[in-house]
Image 1 (cartoon, rainbow, N blue to C red):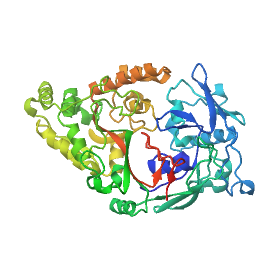
Image 2 (tube, rainbow, N blue to C red):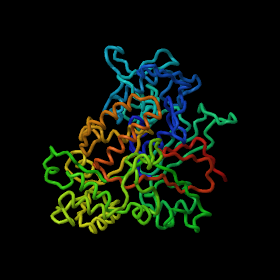
Image 3 (cartoon, one colour):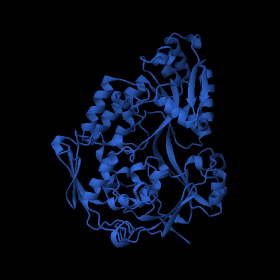
Image 4 (cartoon, helix red, strand yellow):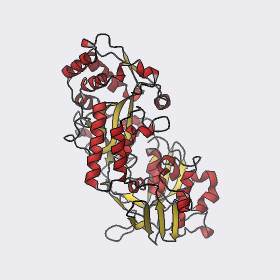
Length: 512
């Protein structure tokens, strides 16, 4: 696992930060492993008929972890005012990475400038400017955890290193870049089905080992109990070409695989107001579609990813989402003959006269894009590859400096809105996440309608309709839908798995 930069939930934007924050803090609601929103500190909630007011009723048995920031060092009971304080803190851009999630909070004269309001100690109201069906999913994100004002006043800037929450584990030690130790919270409020207080583990140790060979040896030697992510170990060494664990390792650990709400894609800048696009063959839909048909996604997954993930034969919305359906959203398959026809339609028969196209990517995708490059060459599409640093790629894509770029999108919350927001015309980069500058009035109308739609089936139909538009207009080249992959020691039982790759340790047991 790479380094943690902060244990403040307001900065929980990367997996490295989210995983430990998830052990230390709780919010109003949480997700189960099937991505259903279930109660946490809130016992229950209701939504007004107009979809603008969310009312949460809090449990009365939730206490902050014991800490020197409190009088006598004992954690006090959580009340609704703590959520009001925690959420208002997210509006401070110096502290929070959550600002874009707060645009729909109504802090107008109508609400007396209080988007979040404690009605009494056990009731919290949240008011929105307009209905937003994904909002309850957003509240499961770790940004919306409850924190005590006493800890902020006591630790100030150092709260990132001295977190105080309500979660199953509490902070013990952090050696930055080396390890992080959390210990059991003896006063945690959740219990199992038998009434036993969670968590079962006495402590959790998270190590930051950049070298994957070293990390793998530590797992083999029993020093580590879990490695997570295809980048954490050599997949060719550990897995066979079907993506299964090689026999020699079966006695050492087991493999967890699960759909991951992540789509890897190649993005295309299509805004003809930008000069580089006006001079590029990528402005033509036929060329963009030709590239989509000119390479074999199934081979890419099998030979370059050992069958981790699924070839993207549907839309941008990945496997694991409710609206994912390759029958309703038909994507691209490998059809070089049709790709050649499309080139001819675009005025480049046999690829003659087609200017070379440059794809910008990072070093860890070099092998994948070289495979695509070689397949495109068979259709006489000349693809050049430019390897960039991650920070350069991110900034240049944001600033519309690259016409073709390799990226991925991970769902921040389990709602299709999060994926389709990349194609909404009001989200043009650099302010928003529409890196393609894709603009389609029909798409925008469906996107806005889906925000207000509370009927699940109608919402799914709208998102499928949007996904079909994206596939047809081709501002992207979907590559694959990823999977969460973990190697876990046989001593570990009760480790759940979900397609948000959220790590929950409260029900884990380690056998001797």
